[in-house]
Each structure stands twice: as structure tokens, then as C-alpha cells.
Amino acid sequence: MDANDVAVSADPVGCPNSRRKLRVGEALPYHKIDFLDVQISDSYPIADATGVSRGVQTYFYASEINDDSLFPGMVNFNAEHGGYNILGADAQNVFFRGTFDPSGGWQPWWTSDCRAAGWKLFPNSSAAFAQGGSASPTTYAPACPGQIATSAATVDWDWVPSQTYATGKTMDTIRVHHFAPNSDAVEVNYFTREYGVTRWEAWRLGTGQTPQLIKDQCPNSLYDAQMRKKAFYLADCHDWSKVVPLTTPWQPAGVSPVDSRALTWPVDPLYTSRNHLANTHVGGPYAYPGSSSVCQLSPWTTINPTSSMTMGWLTGAPWSTNGNCTMTFKVSQVPNGEVVAQTIPKPNVAGALRYGAMMFAPDWQAGQPKPAVQVQVIERDSAGALTGSDLMTVELTNQPQTFQKAFTPNANTDYLIFALYPLTANSRYAATGAYVAK
Image (cartoon, rainbow, N blue to C red; front, top):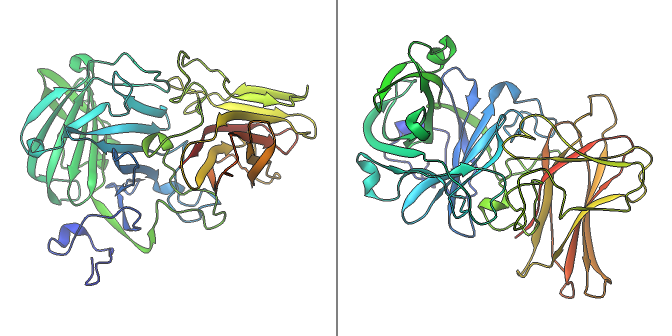
């Protein structure tokens, strides 16, 4: 930071006497990138009304920096080629609350009683600065109706003073080994004061099988190791100890410079407040009691469904993996009021609410007209009379985007209808992660 306490793009490793923690909502003056300049991964704090979520760790491939027309020359969330971890903490532990990646998709890490706090990392106390370990029972699943079976995963942590990274930098480090059941696979995360999440490794059973690319990405490493009396090889690795200064600081909580309704790096309300919609991943984490993770539309409904309207499910990762389902809808003729909707009681919260969804047109190709969709929140009283409405009309491409808008419910409103109106004929729409939240 400079003399005015403003974050600057200098490497914090070289500024031990003029550094502080990043603040919630503060733009990042640099990106962290791995040794071969392949993957950018930043760590930053976020606000959470419940006080549990503390930070986000991003994953973004540098080769795609100009692939999204809404975010020219910018890092932004790419659901099909990037991802994130949500970090949380309570009085006892620090943990991963959830993950999103291109192969597994949406993955909250549940405890057996359905708290998104399952992937334990290390104690939230001075015990983290000594060697230790514990059980880490967890499972990833889009649905968690109250109780869920968890795996017998375990975690070991230790304090490594002056850990050497791929860049040759040395930093004091909390190192965490997360063992799968039966210790048949290991993931290792490295945490530093300077960079947050600084390195990740995946180890698999065997020896001498580390690909040359991984050796190039993570030099100054062991590639074979004995852990819990088993032989492992380093199967994958990213070391984000290189800093790339930015001329224009990056605001992960920001919006597209092209369309201010498109969020740069959206964080699902599961991790920061409450989503008042249900089953928003269509078999996902807000599934109503008694439901399963099999693809199902309820409690979503179709309104005015003509014979030309078809519903379906998107296939392929990350849209149909680990129990995730992504609904699609299409009207073959000129749309005539067909709607996919969900009705909820008006949330008992004061002030403005946010609403939005991740949406895209999977069959769209460059050069074609962009299909449009209208997202609307309709307000009604107990007699069914209209008391308010808010909407946004957005044009979609085959790039998934989360669009968001805010509204303040009318005092006389009793229930809300969240509605998606297709506006373009013969265009298949995909939607997931819809929300109404504080």
C-alpha cells in the first residue's frame, strides 16, 4: 500500500513493512498467475450476511482473456473453462464451502447436517501453526434436504516456515493435505499471508508418472512421495506465486463495461445470504424437502405452454455432472407469452432485493442474431392483483453469463413470481442458478 493506504501493484513479498489485508470490495492491483503464465488464480475477501463465507479463490485461463465480448481484456467467471473455491470459517475451523470447476460443475461441500462447510482445511486458531489432523467428513451434491451421507475423508495440516515456490520466493505457509477415503488420492493446498491460496497439488497412487507439463508448471518440487505408507506421484499442480501488475485494478465484485447487468465474478447466494427461490439448479442445493437429485422441474412451472414450447435438460459437463441439471426451453414459433416461472411468498426482509440467473443460448453461433430473454419479477397481493413489477431484457450468446438487477418490493405485495420469457423463436435457452436474494 502507499502512504495513503491505497493498494498498489507492488509484490507484497517485497513489501513486508507496507502491506495489509485486502478489504471487502477493494479492487485487486495485480493478478496471481502460475509459473507458465497459464492460469490466473486470485484470492480476495467477500461480505457474508451470516459471517461464514470469508473469501473467494478464482480460476481463469489467461488464453481466454479476450474470449468474452462482455468482458474485453478482463478476467471474468467462465463456467465452462474456469471455476472457484469459496472459503469460509467458523469458531473452530477454516474450510472450503463450495467449488465450481469445468468437469464437476456446481459442488457445495456439505457436512452431514447440510451445512456448506464440509471440506475442512485447518483450525481457526493457533493450532494451525503446528502439525495436526482430523476427520473431514463431507460430500459434494447439488441437493441437501437436511441430512446427507458423507465420505470418510481426512485432513492433515502443518506449518512450513520459508516454503519455496516455483518462482523461488519463500513464504511462511500453512500446508493442508486432504486425503480421500482409504487415502487413495490426495489434494494439497498451500496458504500464505501474502497471496492467500498460493499453490495446489493433486497426488495419485503410483510412481514416476508425473507428466512433463506438470514438472514444467511446478519446478522445485517433489514428483514422488510416500504418504501414509503409500507411494504417490504428482498428477497435477498449479503454483500461483507470480504477480502480474495491473494498469487498471480488477474489481471481482464489478460488472461488465458493456452491460452493467452482467456480473464479473458472481457468488451464489447460498454462500452469502439466502436464496428465496427453490431448486434453482433443478435438483440443486435449494431442493424442497423430500426431493432427490434427479432432474426435475418442480417447483418451477410453465405458464401459457403452447404446443411449440419444449423443455429439456442440457447435457455435458459442467451442466449435467454430480447430480447437476440445467433446464432448457425453446419455442419453435414466434413466442406468445410462454413462461418458465416460480412463485414464492414475498421475502420477509427490508429494503431492496436482487434477482438474476446464469443464462445462455448453447446453440448460438457467432454472426447470428442474439436471442433475447426477458427476466421479470411480478408482484401480486393475496387477491391476485398486480402490485408491482420489475424486468430486464438481455441478449444471450453461447457464453454463460449471470445477469442481475435490483428492485424494492411493494409494501402491499404478498407473493412474487420469478419468470423467464423466451423472446426469440427457434432458440434454445439454458438457465441455472436463478435467485431472489437480499
